[in-house]
Figure 1 (cartoon, rainbow, N blue to C red):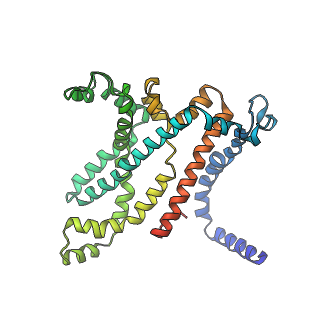
Figure 2 (cartoon, helix red, strand yellow):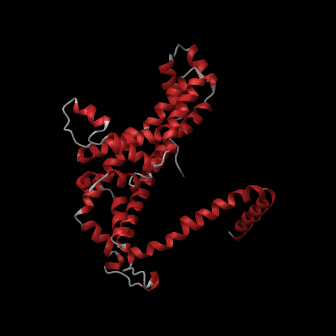
Figure 3 (cartoon, helix red, strand yellow):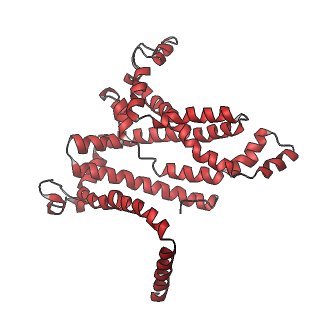
Length: 311
């Protein structure tokens, strides 16, 4: 065992000496992750303590129930089921409608014959990615306001003359559609890269066998990018419980908390606005643990069924 460790260390040292420039390029990334991702993990201890900023982390006392006081408090709270329901509803809606959107757009772009038109379409579809969330939410608020053109259009079909964001049932569709618009174009990049790696001879063989464009897509294109699709799906499942609080907080209001309030916004309000640091940390840990369990389960299923996985 010791010899294996020494051999591994020797090989690593030789490799570092030979490719020191490559390791030097990676060094800033490693430092970034250590400082901003691994070092802050020390702070999760406050979820198991009655944290007081004046006393510090170690001087703050441990909570009751073996340090699980705030976890149990969250599970028993009135908001638990509502937050869980809203988070899953929005995430699954984004998954069902948003995840296939970049794939479909990439397939459509791949079928375009005119390179000039293809580049223009790609550029236009990428643009929303570079618009800040604040501006996007401002545009959405403007479009669905009482006098917005979307609201005015729906008024023609009998919808009440009111802001769409004042209707709890309209929040999820508005969030999902705006999310697709903002992220769909940028998401096609990785699929277009995967499409460019498919051997052209496979299409020629399919044509000889009499396959039309639709059958070529089903039997050549989709199998050719299936590995990429599965990996992106697994990454999406790893964040199924994580919805950014910024966009939701810019769109929602107290009148639609019933359908718009999610775990991330609740953590923000509890920790930043109400100064419940230990409680909000406990809720955040619960959220991340569920994400880890989900991605682990789906990764194992994927490995067994398709032999493709994250690890």
